[in-house]
Length: 421
Image (spheres, rainbow, N blue to C red):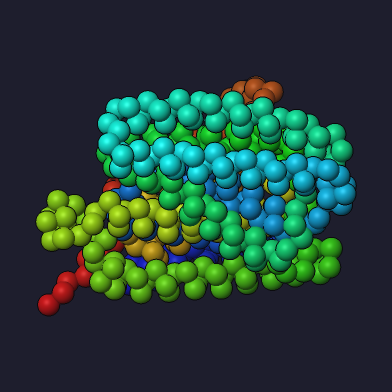
């Protein structure tokens, strides 16, 4: 079966499935599912260029999604007048100046080799300086944080347009990825996965415990939308407008990535992925190019995360979980086909439908099992049978990835190898 024919068949099956869900669960439910699937498609496209184009094993997707979500909350949430009328902004400005001075000192220490200081001594001095900087940072930030929480609750947002928050969410995720990549891209693939996983947890716990900045477990809501909200148009029309915006963004990103994939840049990235030693021998700066695509992919992940958090209208740091915001996206990319942008989009939609529908379908199966089991065999179903159905998502997704790796290890829409004559 040719690749295009397979794509047509799979997307047609997905479309028929969506129409069936529309008929059973209604417009509002289906639109919500499609909007979230669209946001996940943007995130999956970011991952597929990291893994599919360059072979980078990013296990810290959750962290970049959280950074994107935080930035859109911070930029688009309404201004908190209580914060700006207090002394906290002045204290924060002085603290930011102190942090900038500390960073400059650390950068200066990093250049000590230029005056003949040995590498070992330079490393020891920098480590000591980092410890001192940590204690200074905490001693100065703690009283400011207490002042903000006491007088204003938290700092609030800046009241900027939502799309500005999405763009800055992508830029902030790319900025974080740059520093992670500088430290970790020299590592082997499995070590890179462990390092990015650790950074994701650090980012989550910082956002979760910085009550003065994010309200922590108290959450921030309702986040503004870039389109009219359900209060203005009703659920169906508002979600349809959000879906239209998401579909346009997925389409634009898809076209740009397709052009990049077919361009010399894309061929170079695949050459580095397939044989980095040969690529280096041809004069390619392997580590720089890997850093480049790691930053670009993470920026897309942050952008998609910002769109997803905005749609849910709530920023809850505790809501970012490795299962939903890392593992599920890996399943999307692997099922769709790494290195194939159409596969990433298809995988995002298909896997999210499986994720969403596994719970009601399992409830239906359990109901039939309890009804006919009692009628035919006198079986007494356990009292927590319904609660067990709620856990079926993990089983279904695990079964999905297992079957995919067994029968289609390259994904349902594997990468097309372009032959250059």
